[in-house]
Length: 118
Image (cartoon, rainbow, N blue to C red; front, side):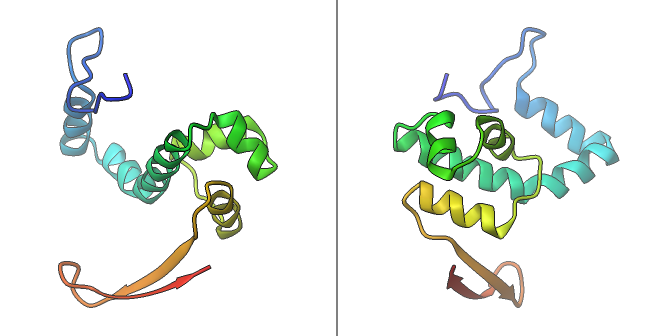
């Protein structure tokens, strides 16, 4: 199951998750708005899940390392809610990583980036 992606996971009614997402983005302005609003949180969630699993940690293990609850980790990994810089710092530390924050200027296809380790 861990190797499946939205492109190949078929629901019981016969469609893939990727198909559902594509349809929602094309047809539903409120879905599109929600998708765009939560995209940064989803990206953070994917990184956190990938690192946690690479370390062989459960959500409960990560919660213990961060000094928080299992439900807080589940919410963070759900990717639908904003995350504070303080939480990101604790997450990075718990996952043996460094938090790096940056700003971009210029065109999106050739940005100039300024970053700082936090």
